Image (cartoon, rainbow over all chains, first blue to last red; front, side, top):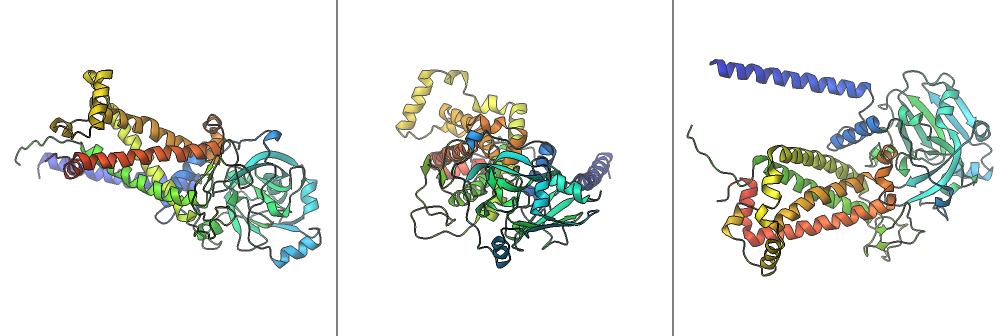
Amino acid sequence: MSDLSRRKLITTGLAAAAGVVGLGAAERIAQRYGLIPPDHGGIYGLGETLTYASQRLLTRHSLAREFARSQISNPPLANEMPPLNDAFKRLQAGRFADWRLAVNGMVARPTSFSLDQLKSYPSHTQITMLQCEEGWSYIAEWNGVTLSHVMDAVGTLPQARYVVYYSIDPDWWESIDMADALHPQTFLAYGMNGGDLPVGNGGPLRLRLPRQLGYKSVKFITHMTVTDNLKGFGKGLGSASPEGGYAWYAGI
Amino acid sequence: MPATTVVSRHSALVRVTHWITALCFFALLVSGLEIVVSHPRFYWGETGNVLTPTLFKLPIPASRSLVPSGYGYVLPDQNGWSRYLHFQAAWVLVLTGLLYVIWGLLTGHFRKSLVPSAADRSWRAFSSAIVSHLRFERPSEAEAWSYNVLQRLTYLFVIFILFPLVIWTGLAMSPGFVSAVPAAVTVLGGQQSARTLHFLVTLALVLFLLVHVVMVCFAGFRSRMRAMITGRVR
């Protein structure tokens, strides 16, 4: 073996080893800082991971655009949705007096909140855009309690990484990371345009997540679970959306 | 090893990035069309929905029953895989484009091969090139080795105007991206304006693609394809 080819062999070997170690380290760092989405497997995993990781680095603390009162869409749009189930209709008949939001999982004080309890917390307002993945959009004034306030009330444990949330329709559930859960514009909204949140827009209680597309702003929220791992939920892809073919992270 | 030097018409980097771009553009076009079908209405300003007036509508059926399309049926919803594919292809295209542009700047590719030569930088040269195109004159032998002035200007326009615009208008629709860079959407006139512009820039790129393919056929499909695949002219 000549010197030249030996040198080449050694450098190639070293480069390959460095590459493998580098990739492994990059993966560990990405996991450590929460840059890998739960639906990272499969042929579209590369694009999803690049989008989620780059947006987490760029937008961790950025605020969604807020608009002037004059820009509120009039009339507001209530989009199509599946028929409401019997459980919902019973609560609706009682004017939602018995509506509960149960929060459990990795929390110090699992709690079942009534709407009045949620309304007794500091109320915040935002005029933000709801943007559907289909292409349409509208602007409304939302009011509600910040999810971070509710998270403080239940006392999330330090190892918490995701909040999983469910509609009264159990097939309709989503999850977000703690960066979104503790973001100041992530609301549990109970009001819209100065009145109660209409049923057509998700009343009595919906999540508002203005930095992501509309399908993450689940309507009719009844249940939330704080967790450090999404593997045990559904098919382990993070939410019902990837199971139906849609991306988990919808900040695009 | 025999010492042969084959002069390549297109360098390996140009050929590889060309075909990756072509593949990504095709994926973006198909998936983009699928996404548009879910709401084939376009607006100007910040917001738009079925309750607001349109700027224009596409006369096609929709994949959502809420959209009044004038057709008695609703197409199947294909947005899931279309969106995954759209953003994946966009990433590959952007990274490929960055590699190409950095390489082109470092090697002088743009200066040597795309910026019109000094002799061509006159109205006379420009108008004579237009006249010969309008007469459908077959390209000369020399044009197998170098681009003419119209080609150069068109490629520069596509690379440095249309592609950056389509990327920008795409990013301007992202609620996450504009939360960090709000000017990206406000200077375009709003989120629905960005969506409309994204569609119009896509039409311009499709028009370029059609003319590009027709010109390749006109100049000699086999020889031009061979040059872009193997690098050799004959």
